[in-house]
Length: 136
Image 1 (cartoon, rainbow, N blue to C red):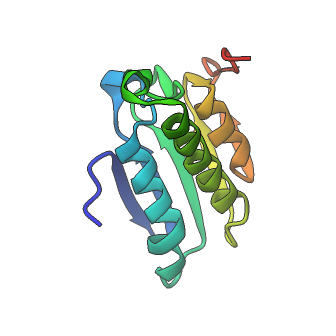
Image 2 (tube, rainbow, N blue to C red):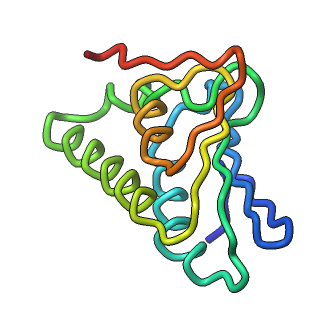
């Protein structure tokens, strides 16, 4: 897969995955979710010598500021529910990943971004990290 919203860097078996949508505070849109699902479901399990994964967001303002709500405007209830289920499937694949997945949290981790961080095995946060579930 050609990643558009993820930057993948391998350093001797430690892969850093950066969600690279800094202009939208790394909000999770459909494309980013597709790429995360592909990476954790197909790409990473096939990498020989993989020792662990660091998941982070581009820039200092946000790890992931939640779902990209601009996409919600075009969705009906069933489509919104399907999108939420795809997100949960990604979180479950991270939780069950056989190697350590560490969230490197910089800035906001809100809504789906907070859930993404919670799905990781370990979380490391900068002093400016902020966690929340604003939809609750």
